[in-house]
Length: 121
Image (cartoon, rainbow, N blue to C red; front, side, top):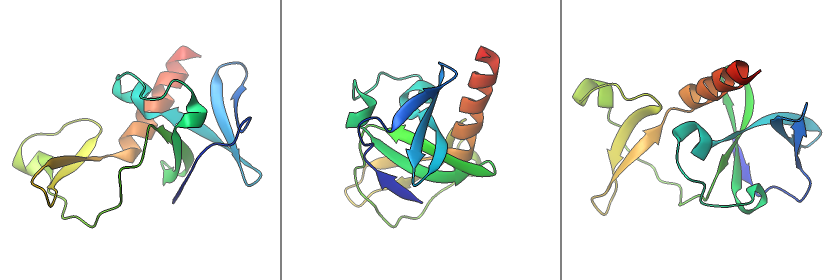
């Protein structure tokens, strides 16, 4: 839906463990992409990253990413049809310079993050 850089103090914790961000009077759960994907964070402080507001799994979620590289119109090819199902990836595309880019399945990422939070509770 949109992207923004978090303002100082806009990301807080709920009950001491769940992160939320205040966006125009609405509190949205924060999902850090690096945590869900099991990678090291590119930014040490969440305020140095970018928050992408998305609508998935029946509600809004703030996806915390390291950076936005750009916006492209692409043709998405299904990996399941052409290769196999990969959790968290909905497809792939070939960029203009020949590189392959994976397309994130945001519904899966949000559902996976929600299930991780439920197990931690």
